[in-house]
Image (cartoon, rainbow, N blue to C red; front, side):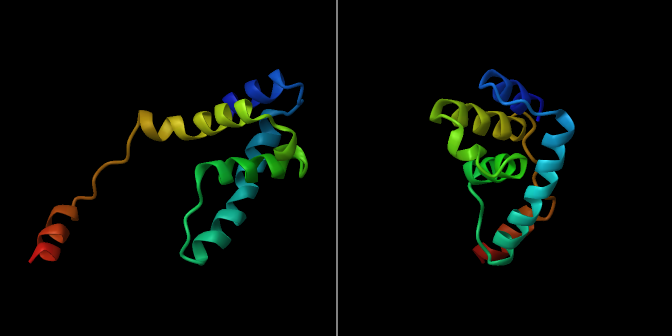
Length: 98
């Protein structure tokens, strides 16, 4: 969210770290509703949900290049520290293969 603050500030959007954290937490309801329908949420949509939680009109005011930077800022941590492989994955794949 620190990168979000930097990017938004460069656009002239004043937002506090507390507001961004709250928006991130509030966007969880959007994720939950979508996941409850067995659908995935593209990263760009999650970023838009966070922005909308800050200000409902904000996603429409963010230029495409800034949106791309926000999506990158949101996704980058998962790429820096990839999730570990589930210990039961190998046996599950072996069973599926049989």
